[in-house]
Image (cartoon, rainbow, N blue to C red; front, side, top):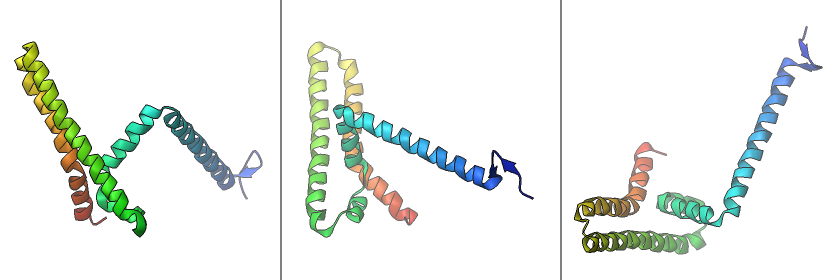
Length: 136
């Protein structure tokens, strides 16, 4: 004897509900991606952040042999440019602090920009090392 709920068995009802939840999740995800695509600044930030955080081994897995060299070279240039921008930002903010007379803020500015620079420089290597040691 099967228990019926609105003409469906319990397993059919659960399967139907699961499919409805999946459709709702996909619609929400599609809506979120649509908002990001319309907001160009947010989209550029997302792409730049992903380019900086993805380790080079991941790029090699998803790229074809013909574009690996070009993609990795662009990745290196982008990472180096961000690193240089952080160092130049530290120098500029340091000069501003000295000229305006707020030398006590100089340490905070230096730590902020140099930590960003070091994060850009070494975070992909650290993530790559974690994945290598994790065996994944």
